[in-house]
Image (cartoon, rainbow, N blue to C red; front, side):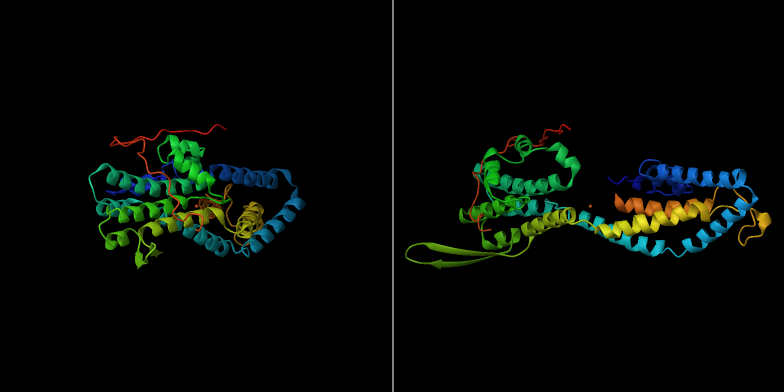
Length: 347
């Protein structure tokens, strides 16, 4: 989960952003300190060996190797490859956030167009929104570890009041090997059409506001045929967002991208830097080695930029026709502020 710092910069003054650099929770230091310690220890090991263990001939050979590694490490296109990879990952991350299925707008339409103060009308409104929320929870269970731990089994959804035992039976009886998050959406459609035929939704325009629908009526001597054609609007928009979240979780980034960026580019670059960025004896007169330090400050900054960039990126109907469970009161019928129970799966 993203750690927010907005309140610290709401009235930014002198030194505010400097204080942000000292934050530990959610910081780059917390993310990278292990890798940075390992890199610093390895660098110090090679530096000590070069300065105190090798003889003069071995030092000259090590210096040639260091110059060679430093020269050709720059040929590794770390910035280009990592920039492309991070752009792709961040785009997926932001796309996942934009596709979180918020039910608020749909709830406003249901509350405004499903009329009636009697119990059946209230039951219809509550059940419609419960179906919308249930569809989202079924998606979250498949893509979020936190949600799955809270609702380890489908029975826990029944205990939490998000679905009834009858609805669970309908859901389990539907033969499908894939995620059935779309089933509550179909229940929503069937219940909304029932509400229209019962007069709880006053007209087709109101029904259209919930999901765009065209009604073509053909009356014969035997029966009434109603052909309903749906196009995407509020309900289908919610369902489409659930499908996109499912797709993001189902189809990950190609493994070859991660292998190229992590193994070949970033790790190879810093392995070369362990030797190539060593401070060599200034007395030898090598270009660019006029001073002598023990730790390469700017190489460590590069480590923060590249590895930190990388670590942040690695951390996003036939059988259903007119199939509607019995509409019944939910367990929070008389509660204004329901509190679903918290369940934790046992590992």
